[in-house]
Image 1 (cartoon, rainbow, N blue to C red):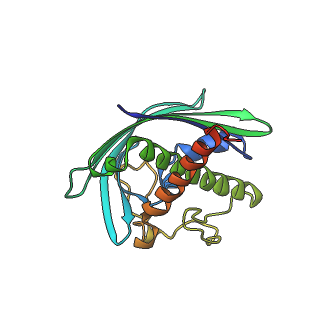
Image 2: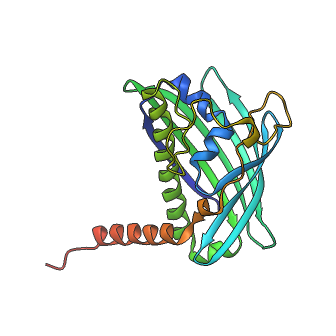
Image 3: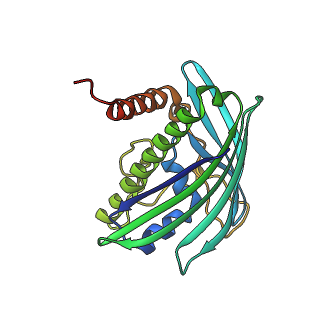
Length: 225
């Protein structure tokens, strides 16, 4: 049975600004730990990979993401993705919808996702994998806020990579020599490959997810007094 995730978060930036950001996978991917884009197939189809590190072991998943529906008037989108573990038995499928609405002088981003995971990662148990997925979403939300709110303060000039914790760039984005050429002229150019040190470190997320589950269990436990 797929894992269902429904989350929402607030960003102090205008809805149109947030919407333009979310439609640009070359910018969004920088907010996803361990992820990178490797190829633009067309304006709505992209290939990429995610690098996951568990202790001394590093695993790479490769796959494709497609923007199936984009409604600029309603600021809604729907995407589907699928990937597989390189040289392994693991696989994942993702269906996600996003919606941007005005809220409290800024924007609210609502995300509904269905994730179907198969392979060795499920040895940790469905509940723990779901908790890790929520931890990852929190990291993504924090990175998006950092990027967009920073751009608002800097008048749209900030080019730092929030997932890497970098400082301001040169004001004009990455040099053309640092970009991967896009297949489609209308699609965004892609950032260079994710450095190894930016691999998604799974163990800290597992520990955090376990601690979160234990806190919830203790809160629900009846008092013995």
